[in-house]
Amino acid sequence: MAEEDPPQDWEWLDHVIGTLDDDFTAAVLERSAEQLRPALSDVFN
Image 1: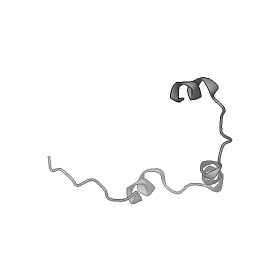
Image 2 (image 1 turned 60 degrees about the vertical axis):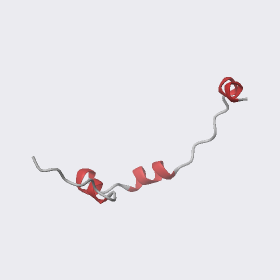
Image 3 (image 1 turned 180 degrees about the vertical axis):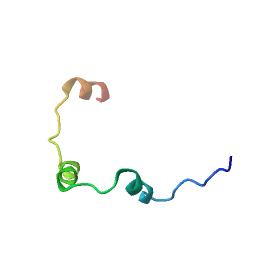
Image 4 (image 1 turned 135 degrees about the vertical axis):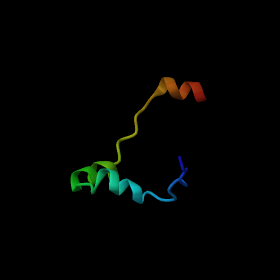
């Protein structure tokens, strides 16, 4: 079996999933509010 070089960009993904709709794009770009996690903060302080 011949080996192929791995892709150097994400263009191959367009062929796998097609185009993304506006709702999906908006959800990906939406920033969630930061979660307060005092127990985890204690570990790093």
